[in-house]
Image (cartoon, one colour):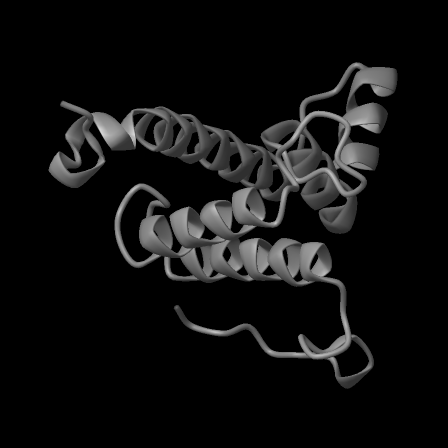
Length: 136
């Protein structure tokens, strides 16, 4: 997985793991957007799935987790980082369409949710397809 540029004040060695995961998901999405590549194909797909597995292993997907990185919270955090939450509120308040840039960000979050659903389905059924994991 390609590593994002790192702020020394919030480096992977000093930042909490959930912040690192969030930053890396953001970086994967930005790289895909800049390259006009869909999230549904590699390398973005593999990178996202790896980050989802890391979040799962760290317990960030559990109900009542201290740090929540479920799909809803992940999208909420990214929308906030990108200013999309404010843009959407303003759009609704003014009864105007989102501008093209914010609409593209919204589509990126929808793609992220599709990847999340795909990963969740595959992850929940993984043992069914692993001969060594099946019980006799």
